[in-house]
Length: 143
Image (cartoon, helix red, strand yellow):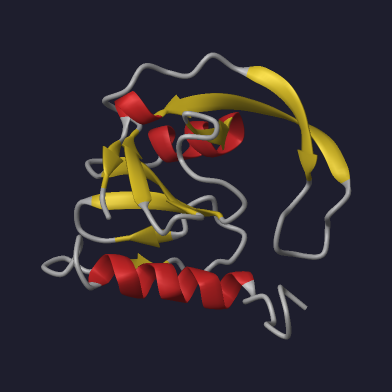
């Protein structure tokens, strides 16, 4: 249970809600579509972007001055974007959305951090991941 009598949404439900919210405003003229492979580092795409979506439901954007990105995901998005923009989009606990154009920001400084293997799937044990910080000043507030 999540809170009093409220069931926490699955990642599939959360992702669909995020896509709906983003398509209702930011991407209304070029809607984003879900990537069909659930394990792909690309969550959504449209004619201009390939993007990873993150739901940072435990904190506001100011708490860590932005968000983390895994180096593996960063590298995949940069190397596989072709002529599209590689984006990283986070929804925070206050309902705001921030996005980072990974080609326009400085590459993060990478460091190791113990994190869950996955957040919304069955592998929730802790492993060491190489991550970097995405700063609010380098992102764009979408909503």
